[in-house]
Image (tube, rainbow, N blue to C red; front, side, top):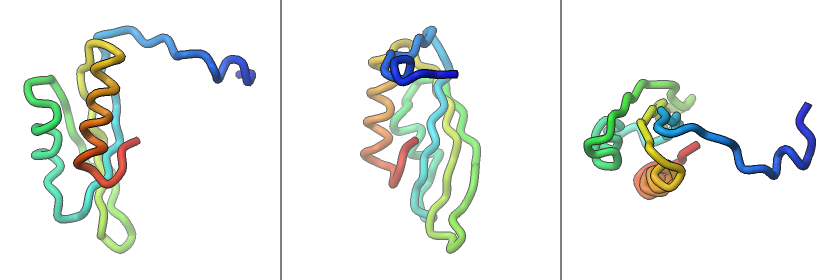
Length: 87
């Protein structure tokens, strides 16, 4: 069982690694174009996940090959600028 002290520690992540992001965009958005604009030449895979009940938003699982913690956080920040939500 994890303790409070364990939750404050930085996780140990081995790089390179395929990191999973959940992106949520408006229904009219193009997830593939968003992924391509952010990822560029990086190896990535995007798969549909769910749509909102009203159909206003769509979510996708985006797996990206990252080489460092800094790169992982840079991608997260870039996705936040173009997506409604990023998890």
